[in-house]
Image (cartoon, rainbow, N blue to C red; front, side, top):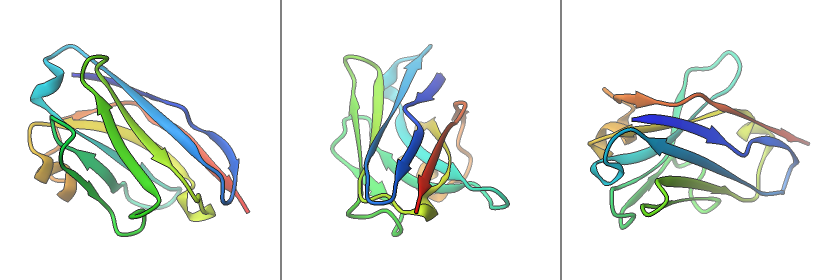
Length: 123
């Protein structure tokens, strides 16, 4: 699976952004999709994941209630709606795919990664 994230940018604290990730190469519905982020000097961390149908989602505690993951299987797209953004959300955001939603949530053995998109939140 090839993945390409987009939609990053510079936003003031309290604002919103929607990230998109386009997938290609393999049957999209075979995979759960996830979002991760990496801030300068920090390890890459799990943000959100969504199962193949979109019926099950998982979120890091730090983003629960603010971020929403969704997917459009007809378009091979996955999205991350980010609301009430905080300066600590500043990071490079990556989308990822794996056959296991659990692997994504645990950031263990994730098979496919896309290039990231920079999100910067100003205070």
